[in-house]
Image (cartoon, each protein chain N blue to C red):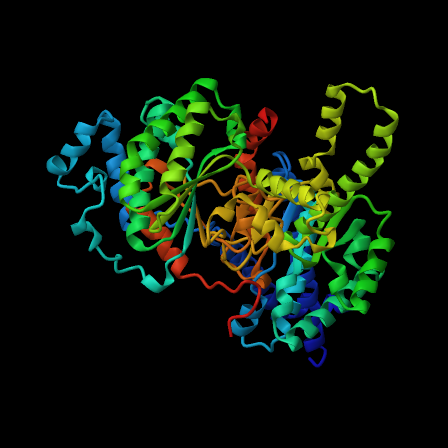
Length: 337
Length: 296
């Protein structure tokens, strides 16, 4: 009986047509949904296009210091890489307008990823990429010193990197040794303190000698502390802290019940600094992982993932990361209001 | 004509059921297509943004968390339909105890209500055969919540199809401290035990004693097996809603090689498209990460 009523009522037919239209429009809406954004993928900012242009230009030019110096003259673009050391005039340079001095992070950590890919994109060898990476690092260290960042930790070599070809590992360590020796004077003059963390048992002896010497000479410097993580992984750090604590328990210095977070913090390798916890972690090359760097210390660190490869991550990338950091609300589990 | 409103209601009810069925069917088809590629085995969620959602929609304070709970149920349903075996959620951190007592109390009440509802016959636990773990320092919870949690763990202990790990009163640093304590206790027990053997074995050579020293030193596996999260493998994807990009003391040890994903949506707004995006990105990087794991 109801079916007959349904068939005869024009209103119900209209309702049916309306609902079919509704299904259709829902389908159209779902097709127009924008994909969700991932971590800070702000690609189309002013600096990005310029960097892309420079990248494509560099592909046709060989990587040599002479070309770098002429770059500014020929194309009218100022390259900050031609500046080598701090001078009194440059020290007067203030923070860029986008950044506020009271919100600057005290400790910045960087995973310098992408040297190999950078070299491959240009048809160069991996060691050219690492050399370019060292230049990029020098620039960032300079900026940190100028802008009042107290500690900079960089992930130079992980325990996972031991699987790389022997020739690359040897090159990396010799590059590290050469860079330390050449920058020794510079760092000492600019009041930068260097510390190395990580498992040093597998490093070559000559490198260890240079490291010990430079650590000793710069240990009283106060402007910036540069911590280089070589042969380091977060799990290794916690493990060696655990072993240290177990030894102390065995020696009767502490009881097992007294083990707490503060004790572990004291035993971690980042106890060489006053600010062991990074405020900001930057990872270049677009990978969205932490890769076992500074495990314990990253509990409340703001993470920033940059699209550029490390040799291209210069001043503009750094400003972008710092701007993003300054806009964040840090609550540490509590509530803001 | 008086019967018309009733008919309209029945019609619209029937139509919405039809739409839901079509939607569910197309979703399952989509999941079958995606399962052609590698599927993550463990997904972790940080459910951030409930209070902001309530404020945004001018709701009263508790309803943000209620909306968050229903979003959680639908996410769990999608995950288990897709074939993801382990799902971990960050329900309550030890740091959250620092909030106002009224808020903490209302959260505890909500959690007690929801934990009890898991035991009901129609709950998602029975629908999917979920084994539930409560991970965290349960001693910090009040007795009722702890008792309910233990009851649920016991009741679901026989399920083995899929696993749900609820991190409650949890902090990664606290977990590591507990694991370190246990490793130290185990080591000192081993030393005592081997000390008894040493007296009997006086003529063991130097190599032998060195090996004993090696075994007494704590290894990575000792810490890892004492972790509360050792019941599940490391997460493949960590999703944090509300656009914040930080770990907030969650699974620090386990997320060394986890893909991090941070959609801007608040937790009650999270939906199927975010899950799909995360899984597709995971599939893109999967072969490279597998290669690296084999090398290590």
